[in-house]
Length: 331
Ligand code: TYM
Image (spheres, rainbow, N blue to C red):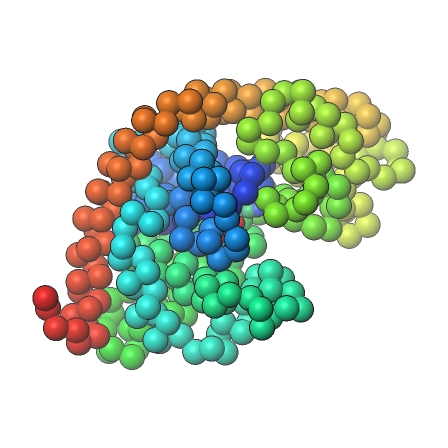
């Protein structure tokens, strides 16, 4: 084993193609080489308003997607964050070693809080501290994520260093982000300058993991294009064409340059038809399996319960060590 992986996805909206290509698919690839722990981060989800019943359903959906995409429940640990109490416990300790200046630099907080900073909840602001706790509770060494999470993983490194220095220990490793270039940042189908996101109000902007074949085909057909003939990769001047090419290359698992050459003289309409066939062929088996699992909640609940027990075994040992290091009396 090359080390230990931790990564997570929020059950806070529609799981989409960006989550799959940017994260889940890489998790599947890495599961044999690393000891891997994958988490449905429900504590993170409540940093923005959630309907309780929908949150429960989305937690099941995200867990189902992990299994449907090919994560092996024997080899990996799959669990829900709220099932292991040591996550917020370690986050509190980290809150007490993290300078506010570090949190003020986080671009995601600025994006999400917008101009109404004073009305944003404290959890949204300290969210990266909880994320550092998620990773470091397992003393994970590698964190496979999309590009948008890189800054948070770097903060986790800084927090690990701050803790080690403050307590003169070499307790936490400095975790590294693992980002696959080919699908680091999948963009919206409606606007190639914005990332594909579950919080985009337009459902046409993304391909959801639960979309059926017709919906996928229709969304790709309506995806924004430009007036040039032939596809080319040039994110500055042709963001939409570049994004669709990148999605094609990532789904086909081919180098972008090869795909670019193949479609350099193809019209947008013909290219979209090819992309749509490819997307359906790759995603439909996963979607079908997700639906089957979501109808069999009992199976997912069992997987999560077993995962929580495995995660807990590591987490309770590490939090006890941390509590001892900081000077809390044993119970
Ligand atoms: P979240 O739930 O927003 O996204 C889950 C994963 O999907 C990736 N991703 C994308 N990749 C490429 N293109 C996109 N358009 C795209 N959109 C999302 C994200 O980079 C991420 O890898 N804070 C995290 C969850 C988290 C976490 C952690 C991750 C909590 N604790 C510990 C790693 C380790 C988040 O909100 O991801």
